[in-house]
Length: 266
Image (cartoon, rainbow, N blue to C red; front, side, top):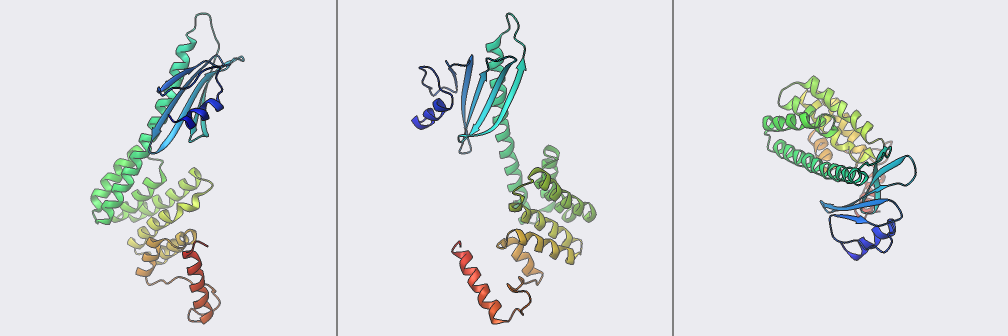
């Protein structure tokens, strides 16, 4: 642990004459009855978990989790202290459970990433049957994950020729995304509308496919995959000024100007 990290924790939970060490679990003498602290480093991220027992009744064991200094969640257990109860043991158990939960979350996240990477790779190789088998495995483990559901719907169409169910799953995946990420979902929409479009297209529904691509590109005008799909379908980007013809010099030069500004990050 660096001096800066130690200073951060000691400022966050000031101890009386105690300096944090590099041990995984540190017991700290403090104004509170008891504290435990753990530092977990995974995938370039640093988690701190502080477990403490409050003085006030009812007694509460509270485990607080920080990610790179920011509070992300708190687990609480309330209990009535009885004579001879193993308070220290209860604190140890609560702290251990929270540490294991955070580690498990990170393992689960990495597993999802591996699934998505491998499924996408198989699709690129046109190995749809293998991609479907892997997606079914992922779906059994993560049935509520919108990404898995979107891939599942797309592959139902390509691999199993079940277009109706494929489209339904792709649409349901978009709904799940909206529910799981009510704010900031715009960043993810292009992926979902791209899968939906490809599913529509495989079903021979070109108009719906183009509509989905247009919806996706409305969230990310520079999405290369969507632009490539639109070009395959013979669809060009809409002119900058819709009421003027595409060949109009104003549209041409305004379009060039906007493209240059985007390239400069303006």
